[in-house]
Amino acid sequence: MAKRRKRGDGGVSLRKDGRWEGRAVIGYDDKGLPVTKNVLAKTKSECAAKLKALKDSIQAPAPDQPKPGILLTDWLDFWYQSYKKSSLRPNTQMSYERRIYQHIIPALGSTQLDKLTTNDIQQFYTKLKQGGRLLRAELYGEGLSDQTVRGIHTTLHAALDKAVSEKLLFRNPADDCRLPPAKAREMQVLSPEEIQRLLIQAKEDGCFELLLLELSTGLRRGEICALQWNDLNFRTGELRVERQVHRVKGELVVSPPKTKASNRSVILPGPVAEVLKAYRETVDSKWMFPSPVNDDAPRDPAAVRKRLQTVLERAGCKKVRFHDLRHTFSTVSLEHGMDVKTLSTIIGHVSSSTTLNVYAHVTDEMRRTAAVKIDQGIGKAEPPTGSGMTPRKLAPSTFQAHKGQRRKAGTGRVTQINEKLWEGRYSPIWPDGQKHARNVYAHSGEECEKLLAEMIAAMKAEIAAEKERLKTAPKAG
Image (tube, rainbow, N blue to C red; front, top):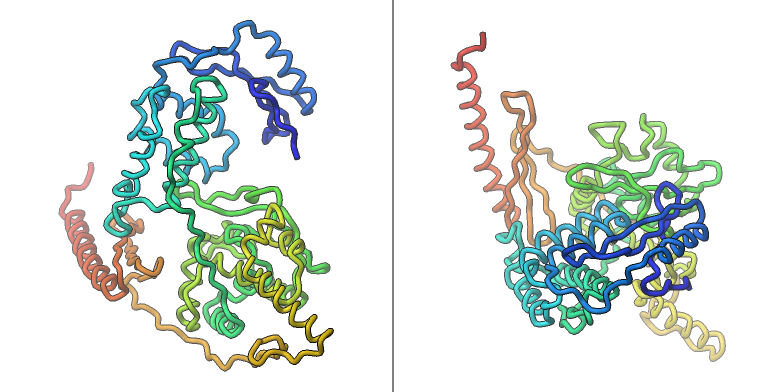
């Protein structure tokens, strides 16, 4: 376990450029906010020595009492910009900024830091649950989810903890707040029959290799979209996972994996490697799964999610998330005898305890199976009827792939986003030569089709009017 630095000693961290940075508070400004200074070095020990020298040279000690008059808005902005932002991934930065600048500061920012009470924060959380949603409240409801409220609390609590360590507060007023219960999203796993149907339908829909690879490795959606052909050694079957794709402010971004453990290698089964070898001959791109509209770009994870939902529906499988394919791989691996430590390494968990917590239901069943086998071996007991303990070979599925029904040109498209929400989208080319898309949302497929048809009619009328306007408009010069 890493040794913690003493409070007041500053912090030492490794920068992206390979240098070590030390940062310490050297004083306080007129508002009472900490003023920091940094040192840089090639090694951690050299950086720590420089930081100590910096601390020794500081004459003015930190104040013993909290400074009055600091507004929460000033402290939150300083804390985020100075202590957190540089260490966060782009997506995480966006989450922090939404929590701080869209929720916490508008509600509590004008409160003095030393006047903030537990009751203030508790009432803030209650209001978030009742009416804190800023976008699409008509679709998802007025209040924020339990998970979002807990995330806002985590950010606020961390900022106030830092204020306590800087002696701006005596105690953290968020310590005693009651939070909504932490509810893990229900895990769903495809059955062996559903896996067969999914892959049969995927061949028809042109995504067989991607889904086969997912069910064989359990990669995260962003990881599988970021794979390049030079990540795969066809001779050894080794597949390196070194990057991920995600969206930041509407743009696709390729970055290192989520954690150090996520940077890993996976050995593919021989048949899977052979399928990818044949597939390689059909792809003219460095990306294993390139964008359908641009071979030089990776596939959009959102497009993969939507495609999966279409394939699941056509294959007659239950509706699951892409992440549930990762759960399916993990569950099948454990059921076929893979140890937890090996699985943890393959799927990129930081520790085996995380894997055990997520798949406790599987390991419990494995223990029961082991107990029955021991009883059979020692006590010569007969296997329980219907226990499923006797291995059986799964018969090939008789499922026939659904050929699909192509939508007519000019009718847009409808996609089911989740159990209660459908999205309709129409992207016509306007007189300026550019595609301009619009969306509609509804709580059923039928309602979405109706709203989409109305929107398409309105957009076609607008396009016709714009064409007419351009015809009659006086030409320049």
